[in-house]
Length: 525
Image 1 (tube, rainbow, N blue to C red):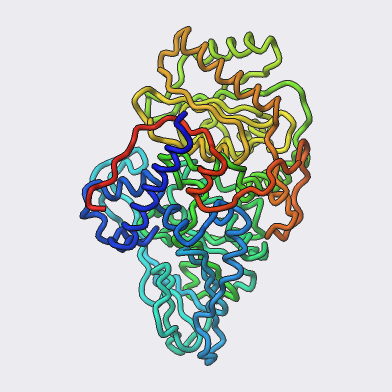
Image 2 (image 1 turned 135 degrees about the horizontal axis):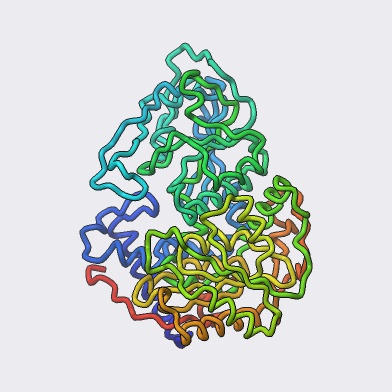
C-alpha cells in the first residue's frame, strides 16, 4: 500500500490538472471533450483519473454529493420551469439539476411517434452482437416532442430528441397516458454491467421524483449513439416489471402516432455515474463508507423481485457461509474462463473444515429468477473479472449476518488498471479482494492462493458483516417509500462521515490504497 500522504499529494496534482483541463480545454463532462482531444493522451488521462469527480469537487462536492441522499436532495431543490413566465399554454417543462447533470419533466406534451424512424446502418465489421455486420439506428425527426403553446426561447441543452417544438395547432391525440411516465433508452442491454448502470439511473430518477413514477417507457436510441433493438425486452428487465405498474415500448405506439403524456420524465443527462466513475482508479470515497444510494438500490430491488418470485421478505439467518464460484462458459474472452473449478471448490471446502457451502454455476445459462434465487442465498461471490461480478454483487443479501464479499480474479497482464468492481463492492459495504492469477491453468499454487483470498474475505465478514447504513433504510433520507425488512446488523457504524472534498478524504481518513504505477499528466496541462 502506498503512503497516504503521497497519495494525497498525487491526488491534489490530478485534481489541479482536471480542473485546468476543464477550464482551458472547455471539457463538459458527459457531453463534450472540447479541445482536449488535441492534447496527446488528454482524453485517456481524464478517464483514467476520474476527472468527472475531480471537476465536481472544485465546487466543494463531497462523497455524499456524489452517491448519497445529498445528491437526490440537490436535484429536488434545484428545479427550474423552462417555460416560465410565458404562461400561454398548458404545457410545462420543469428541469432539475445537480452540477452538470439534468433531468426534465414534460407536463401535458405531445409525442409524435410517427417521427421516430429505424434506419439500417452498416457497421465497420461483424461482431458477436451484430453478426450480420448491420444494426438499426433510431432517428428522431424534428417535432418528435411538442408543447401546447410557445416553445422555450432558449434550447434546453438536453437530450436532442426531446428538444421541444411548439404544437402546429392540431394537437389532438390518438392515445393519452395519464400516469407519470419515465422514458429511458438503454446503453448496451446485452452486457450485464451496462445494465446495472442503467438500472441505477432508473432508480435514481424514481427517488428524485418521489416514487410517483408509475409507468416505464422503453425508447431505444433516446440516449444518442446507443444500439436499437426496437425496444424489445430482455431477461435482465424483470426488475422493471416488478417495480413499475406498466411497462411500455415506444414501438407499440408506432401506429398510434400522437400520444399525449400528462407527465413524461426524461433520464438524467449527463448521468451522475454511480457505477462507472473511477473504473480504472480506486475511488477514495469507497474506502470511507458505503453508498446509501447503492445500498438502497440493493434493498429495494431485492424486495421487488422477492415479491415477484414469491420469496420470503428477508434473507434467512444462517451460520454456514455460502460461496458461489461463477463459471464463464459462454465468455467470448477465453482467457477469463476459470479452469480447475471443482478443484478450487474442493480446496475451499477443505480450508473451511466443512463450514463453507460451495457451488459452481454458470449465471449466463440461467433465467433472471434462477439467478436471483441463487444469489439471494449467496454470501461470497468468486469469479473472473467481467460484468457478471457486478450483476451478481447487487443481488447479494445485504443485511444478512453472513453477508457479503466479492473475490475478483484477473488474468495476468490484462485489466491491471481496472478497479470498477472493487469500487462497486466497497460502495455496497462488502469485503473485497482482487487477485491476478492464471485462470485457464490455476494449478495447485493458484488454487491455494485463491482459497486463501476467499478465506480472508470470509474472516472479514465474520468479524464485521456488511453494515446497512441508516440513510439506506429511510431514516432522514430522501426515499419516500417504506423500506423492505432487513435481517442482521442494520446498525450505523459510520458517524461524521463524508466531510470535505475528495482530496480531503484521502488526508483525513487515510485509506489504504493498492500500489499503482504513477501516471504522468500530458505536458500541455
